[in-house]
Length: 112
Length: 117
Image (tube, rainbow over all chains, first blue to last red; front, side, top):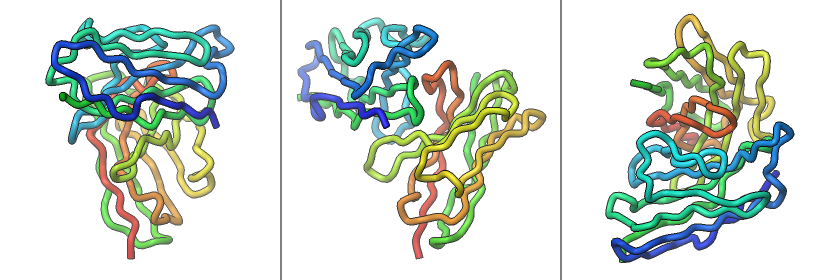
């Protein structure tokens, strides 16, 4: 199975400051159709996961533009330009290129 | 508005069976791949199974192969997960997910399955 490794696992951030989460895969995530199926999810406390970013850098409808995704091959990053209180939660990267689709361990974002 | 409402969870003994259902509304169910994803208490996420629009393509994570069966009824806008030979390690919240290109587009609120004697 493809192993997704996130860092850091805990991320205390000051309100209004930027945050960055790294995700590395054990294999290239480029699929045979040329797309890279690397996605990012946010799970707020007590809620189900919500997709933020699909295929590396495409923001979902309704997702604030302070969230952005980048990367290629095996190295990917989720950035929050200015953290707000509503961003508290656990963030997961997920690959949909190789079955079984797998998630990273999660990065817990909290306010300092 | 897209809605996915899971049901059927509960407490079951090891070796027992349970059938989860997911009622979909707010979109054309028959045109989407669908999945089940689970999350053990306090743990991360695990993709359990997916199936395509007409059921001709399905796939399962190794840990549930031969025990779980994903199915759908497009006429009833419903997705199912039949779970047999349940084990303690199957204890989790099970989410119904509407797929949009290998990327887990939209998730329901989940239903809790507890396997314990």
